[in-house]
Length: 210
Image (cartoon, rainbow, N blue to C red; front, side):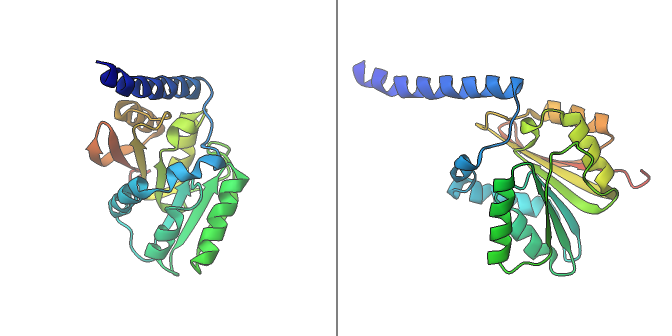
């Protein structure tokens, strides 16, 4: 019995910390701090980043918004995929994250990436400019999620789509039902979906006649 108890105590402590983080996140949404970049850049995330890129249907010449780009883990491969004739607009609210992303793009020799320090919903995005947009484990960190989705909707070209990915055990995790309800309210239509309730990608399209 005692060995089992010693195993259960750490699991219970981890669960309590996770629940506390989730409750704090719900009341006071905030971005992932730079000190926790190691949580974003590891073998687990590398595996599903490859899957995310395949779900964006990228091709040379596309214009892509990487919203909440963090240290540029997806910015760099997306910029490579769209090529010199395409472009990436990388946005993050934290200057430290933007600096990391800029360094990563420079190290990769990329010149087709534009960076902006701003929060989503602040009206800083150009209208009808992007073919694709992505929010990867970012939506739950935004205080006004509907305003953020509406701004992204406005920034997409007609027929363009937003790809939202949520993954447990991220304390800011948003269930698919909530994401879809907000997206529909913002004007999006569901294009397709991948994954399961614990790790999913929801692609949301701006209508061609919008």
